[in-house]
Structures are given as C-alpha cells and as structure tokens.
Image (cartoon, rainbow, N blue to C red; front, side):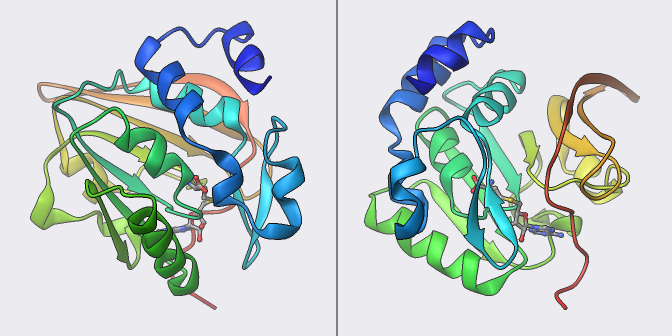
Length: 202
Ligand code: SAH
C-alpha cells in the first residue's frame, strides 16, 4: 500500500523498493502507533522526534544512488528505520543520534533485527564520524540551517549528500549536495518538513 504511493510518486530504484518492502516499519514505531505504521506519514517516536514518512525515506535513499559497496553516514538515527533501509542495500552504515535514549534503543532494535552492518553512536552529528570517513554518501534526517562543513569534508570525491536545509518546522528544502573535484554543486529537490538539527541536548 505504501509501496504503491512510493512507486507512484516516482521512486524507481529496484534495490530501494526491495528494501522498503523488506524493512517492517511497525517494528520501528512505539506500540501506541503500530496500527498507523504503514500510513505514508511521519509518526512520533518520543523526545519530540519523529520517524520519517516512508516516501521521504525511499526518496532520500534513492537520491544518493546507493550501491552495494557503499559506506554511508546517517545523521539523526531516530528509530533506526532509515538506517535499516540503507543497511539492506549498502555494505556499511554509520549513524549518529544526539538523543541518548533514542540512539541506545535504536542500536538495540537494529541488533535484535540482525543488522550487523549498522554502527550507532550517540553524539552531535555536526562533526560527522571522522575515524570511519570518508563516506560514499551522507544522509541527514534533521533540518539544518546550513551544510555542516565537517560533513562536507567527510564526503568522498564524487560523493552525494542529501540534507534538508531551512528553519525549524518551516521553509525547508531537501538539497542534494555533490562533491566533484574541488567543486561543490547543490540542487533543490523538494520542500519538506523535518525536525530541527540540534547542537546540544536541552
Ligand atoms: N532517520 C530517523 C528519523 C529521525 S528524526 C528514522 O528513520 O527514524 C531526526 C533525528 O535527528 C532525531 O532523532 C533527532 O534527535 C536527531 N538529531 C537532531 N540533531 C542532531 C545532531 N546534531 N546529531 C545527531 N542527531 C541529531
């Protein structure tokens, strides 16, 4: 049902569609929301955060052109759903969450589901994860006011980053950032609404 929406709205990459089919979203939402897990909308996961809308997850995953040999960095683990969708396709996923409770429960959930190729860290994702970079692609799932320079630095030559840019809860644009030689190109893809990229926990 969600898959029909996703395909109808233009996601074509077979590996992405296959992954969206195999990752069970109801395993990533709180019990009170399980019955809504297959609706195409974001859902609350606690701590003021949300699990993204399935179409957006599929669209962002497709936009980085994921390949099996890729090492991908995600900022904003949340429930771990986007990380799982990536982990079905690529070799290795590094994902960072700033809210300890969410990071820890996502790590436990991903382990329980058997994802041995996802590494979760609880810290400020602004600085990326230098020890494991550079990355073939970076997926940011919280809206930042600008592209954090450390993330750009940790992107491989020819790499792609997908990131919502804009003010909290309004006027955000999903941007595709590509690193080509010394040149950085950016492209606006579509207006979106994401929770804010925060710098330290309140
Ligand atoms: N990808 C998630 C959606 C998460 S919503 C999923 O599939 O469920 C965005 C997440 O980004 C929130 O959990 C929020 O706490 C986190 N976040 C916000 N700012 C951050 C930062 N600076 N570093 C790491 N995580 C951050």
